[in-house]
Each structure stands twice: as structure tokens, then as C-alpha cells.
Picture 1 (cartoon, rainbow, N blue to C red):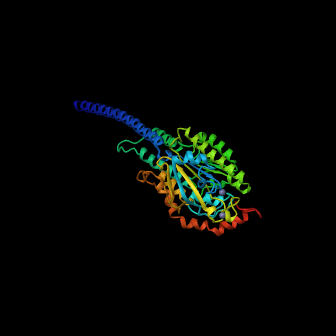
Picture 2: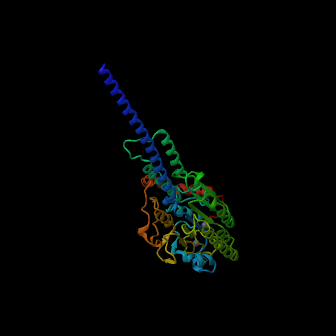
Picture 3: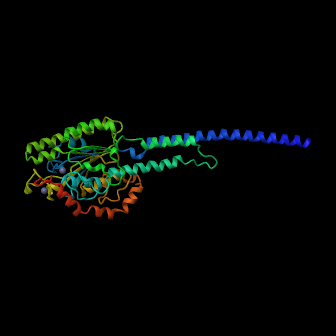
Length: 411
Ligand SMILES: [Zn+2]
Ligand SMILES: [Zn+2]
């Protein structure tokens, strides 16, 4: 009897201990779930607010076919706003030369990819190699994924997130993945490579690109004003095509008047960025041209397309955080250096570029972010030779020749 009673008591005590410890475990388990969720959401908020890849938007404006003589060579004569108002805020490159064939699409292709590629001059075939914008997008999403892995890791041996917590965390992680610009890239202008949203890396779907081609300069300006606050792009590439078109008309006064217009629009676009907190004083703002026009002894301003000094000599102005102000560089550079310079400033790599970053534009080179290597850049680095064979000049020249209607002049 006594033995049975003792057993009952022991069982009651054990059950009591079990109940209390289960209760305590449940309490601490739910406290842990809450603490874990708090830690993750704080980490995610910190990630989206301080993502270094969202810190510096990039805006590149190409004034199509503005010759050196009427550009930086004439100082403020035709481009008074760029020369007197924008130039002191950044670095100008006075020994900047086009090494691609001096026609629009080839040079745009080289500016975007950092290497010479032979593409037809009508924009219907995109360069084989990825653009600095596509690689930026890859680097940004790689960075977010690797930070999310660190943030989400539970690092507590005893506890595990339960199903409910896991679902909530996944939702937060998706918010972080989708946070940011409505479109990564905004392309506006005339004679753009309109096939750019057919991405070679497969990492820039066309729904992440806003591209409008065949615009007059004033329309580029109007779209720019309307779209920047709307889609908040991180990367903008524009081609002001009216100067080139006016040049081909062979009417000198029309040509220089159009340059003055382009100058005014570039400055207005700069001012409109300054009105927006997202862009004010933290945008890398580049003004350049894709080629010049013939030297006087090669036919003069109406046309371009050869390797004479007039066609090749070009210029670049670069303004932005970490860029020297009121600085003049006389070092030799080309359009192949544009993409690597942007990648350097933002902290990623373009292994397929043959150009190099323009280091003298940076105030303190040591402060530049450490370049991160993404899965895409690693794969690309091992794939250059194969891709190059796809880029064989013969292959593309053949299709280029087929795509040009008989009698049409390359411009
Ligand atoms: Zn052009
Ligand atoms: Zn020429």
C-alpha cells in the first residue's frame, strides 16, 4: 500500500516537473521565436536602408556626335552651362579618344561593356558581353542574397524557427529582395541599342528596364523629368541624338544651335536631380560623346565614321561623390574605360572589360569599396573566350551588312 502511494506521489511530482519544464520551454521557445524575428527584421531594415549598391545612382548622358572642336575644345562658346557650371564640380578628361569604329552603336556598345565589339549600327543586335548595368544588377542582388543568408542564420543550437516564423521571415526576405528601384535601368534617347533588354547574362529581364528609343532631345529631357521620380532607377543611360542629326544636315548654324540646346538640357537634367533627395549630390553624373566628326581636311563637321582626329578625339566630364572637383586630367583614356570606372566606384567587377578604371578621377582611391565578385562575374571570367567566338567580327559584320538597306549611310 505504502509502496503504491509512494509511486503515485513520485509520478505526480515527475508529471509536475514535466509540466513546469514544458511550460518553461514553451515560454522560452516563443520568446526565442520573437527575439529571432526581431533580430532578422532589424537586420533586413538595416540592409535595405544601407545597401551600398543603392547609395550611388549613375547617370550617363551621351551627346551624340559632338566634335571636340565645338565641345571642350571651344570651352564655353557652345556649351556654356557644361563648361562654366558643371565642369568645376567634377573632373574633365582632355585626352579622351574613341578607339571603336566612330559610329554610334559600336561606341555605345563599347561604353556599356568596356570592350570593342562589332555590332550593326542600328541597335537591333545587342553586344554579346554584359553591360556595366547588367553586372551592377547582378552584383546588387548577389550582395542582398549573401547578407540575407547571414541575417537569417538562427545561430542558436537549441532552438529552431517554427513554421510560422519561417513563413514570416521568408516574407521579410522577399520584401528585401524586391526593395529598391522600380526599374534598375532607364534608357532614353535616339539611336539606342534598343535590343539591350535581351540580356546575355539572363540577369536583366526586360521588366526591370525602362527603354524608350527614337526621342528628340527635348523629349529625352521631359521623360527624364517624369520618369526619374517615378521609377527611381539606379542606372540611367541617355543619348541626345539631335546634335548628330543636325550635323548630318550639313547646316553649320543648325548644328551649333542644337549643341547649345543639348548643353542647356544637360544642365537642366543635372538641376532636376538636385531637386530629389535620392539623387542630390550622390549621383555619378557623366557627360560625354560617342564620337566626333571629320576634321576639316576629311570633309569637316557634316559626317563621321573614320579614324581621323576629328572623329576620334572626344571628352568626358565626371561629377559625383568621391570624384575630384575642378580637376583636369590629361592622361590618355578611351570609351573602354567608362564601364570599369563606374564598376570601380560602386564596388563590383567587369572581368570581360578590356578598359581600365580612370583612377585619377577619385579623390581617395583607398576609400573605394572592395570589389565583390559575383557568381555571374566568376562564370563570365571563365567564359570570355567562348563568348568572344560568338562576337566574331565576321559573323556580326555579315548580319550588319544584311541589315543595312542598300544606299543607307552609316551614321
Ligand atoms: Zn553617334
Ligand atoms: Zn573622320
